[in-house]
Length: 137
Length: 420
Image (cartoon, rainbow over all chains, first blue to last red; front, top):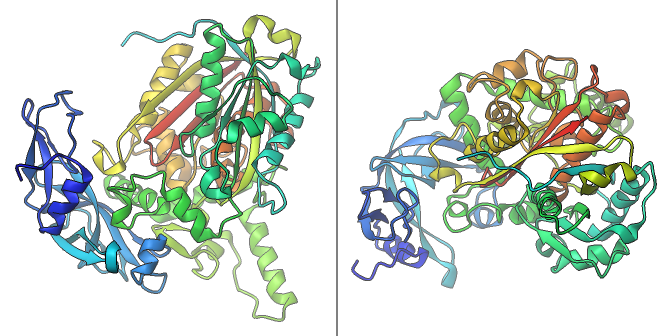
């Protein structure tokens, strides 16, 4: 990770290796996911790469019946909806991700606070194929 | 931080808007011309267009919606105002308020005395899917969109966090929609200016006319609970929790305070303006409030020297029903966690103790995104001047507020106006 330069390209390259890598401020210790080069907490510019455990809890969610074109292309529609959520990572930051392993048919029964672990998955065809971050209950 | 002050006073002297709706034969510039003409007609002491020194246009994405970039000079040209400097201002769904703010700052700086502000958006040229994708570019496409989030989806996530924290159920959200349609039914400019009961009866009549089975809905809640009439979009948000895809424009004339009475005997004074920025939804300390809206509100209140109780007319950014509930808390009208109870108790209706969105809000009036912030000002203009017709608030309100949000709160702007 010595060449990790806190960009989205570097973040996605780590996702492809099934690693969740953000950054941490060397001055104040604040971790960030996604990575950023400048600390929005203490305004320092001294960052280091920081690997997250991929463990967290569901902080907010929705079941989406009418998704963007990218999700329609992935096979989702109002007969086959999906769950997107915001995950509280055990290291502190939150991140947006698709959520798997919850009861899509009963959104009211999905529980905020459900423990989750990172699940890396591929989507897309040919050159647009890439690894995405998801979380699984 | 010490309070911020404008360099000199700014007055709002004229306001007008096009009807909001779906207008297949009209583009952004033509909609803005309509709004401008109504604005000039509102200047009761007359108006010489040659007096306009600068133009600020709020527009989110004419590139994506119409394939047209470099929008501002075209707007100035069609208004007949070239060669004055014309500048487009973009802040997603808060673009209109940001254009207004640039106009305010330009006059307060002393550079100009007369500034035209417009907001315009033409969204219905795309399919609903196309509009959903275009609007999604107001989110963080690098780190939010890959999660599958749409805008309804992100506000739905706010709703689940709010329900979890404060005990609200999706039933309360339906009340916000019912209320805003009741308000919009009195607004001739509204895109869906009908009560939900009127929409329901029209659907029943249409089914009967076509010889189809007539739905058995009796109450508005029967209709809103029926997935055929009110499908889930992003749980817990259904179709009638979402503002529509709209075309429309709005326009106001701002002048320095000292010349306001050359234009009208009833100018409004801009007494507070606040704007703030924030990170993506997942990066915030809270999911049940928009910190940038709170901040923008605090700056505006402080500048104006008023408190929430002084605000007698208010238009808030109800792009989704949950957004109105959160807004009423962020602006200090209700304590955190109590906005939903206020909505349920009817406090935010036109006859309630704290009327919100007398225009019908974005929900019923329509949400042509770049125009919406300026459209909110049109309602406050009429409410404070007593010209809001059937939807006029009682008690001759003299202080009003607009609250306009871009994205899920990455941009927020709050303005306070006073009739003296």
